[in-house]
Length: 302
Image 1 (cartoon, rainbow, N blue to C red):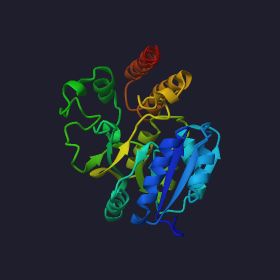
Image 2: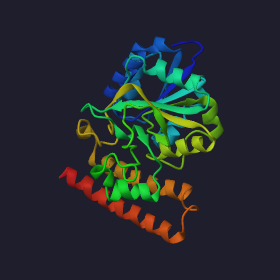
Image 3: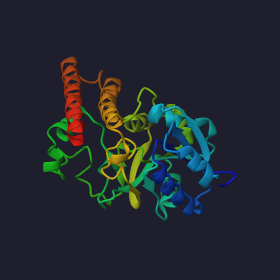
């Protein structure tokens, strides 16, 4: 791409060759919006992704290694990153006109902002609600994961805090965390917080990163003036469109790892904030939720 990139786009790939191709083509289409470089970090894909990138996208810097998960896979790109800004972008996304220019413009003109994300649109045309999230406190987790009160009262500030349902999705506003699907930040900030926490294999590492950035005093912004398309859940077989390409064993592994990450996050950030009895109650709930998730995956495969 450009000799002196202002932006580095890091894309972590695992067996999503076709989707990765669409993503890279969309980046190429809008490369003139900002001087950029693209790094694809491949987690030991077996679908020919590495050769595919080498053949069709020679302008991409390709890093191939073992399947070390989301955090380590993205951090693999750290020594090769030259942009003052870094965009973590999922391979199951497609950019649209103005996304890069406007999100970067917002970040540059708001000196107190450390992270910007855009609106994420699913294949159904609906909003990917995980684009903007509150921290999963015990109360937020109870209302969102267990009681699902945010589905019954989607605009309630009390019950719909996790997805900010009480704020229209076309309004730019400050949030506690964003999804790693499109996470734009400054390289200096990543160095301040030591990039992604490698204790996480998959899931919650983006919330953890947002937590660390927020603790440094930076604002995180949901900016819906522009949007991208997001297939969502392709590499872990969660997407119905992509499920047939992912083995049952892999789907089960990834879905259970998601729950394990919840426990890691809670122990890191909430264990000292709440009384011991509540902590053990939460951990018990997480373990039970893991059993429920196991049954869900098994049922879907029958």
